[in-house]
Image (cartoon, rainbow, N blue to C red; front, side, top):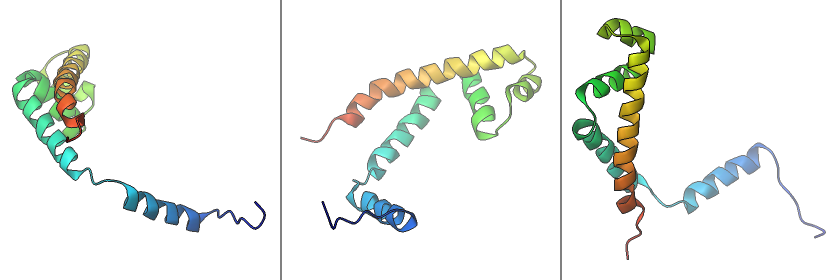
Length: 105
């Protein structure tokens, strides 16, 4: 392997980033489908209370203590509600992901 030159540093990282981007398949269609499925699952499979807690926690960036004060419940109730909503979403998406992961024949 004499004469082989190994590149390092910023130039190599930039070249690798371009290479990976060019070689990667576009996943925008799958991401769009996933977003639609998440929104559908939030509307149909998560209870209104779970949806409200998750919205305040993830979208509005409130902590669990703030959500508990706002809703007039205990902090542990908020935590359990969010976890249950997450489990419901995961279960719904897991069943739907089978279709997403299938390659076209």
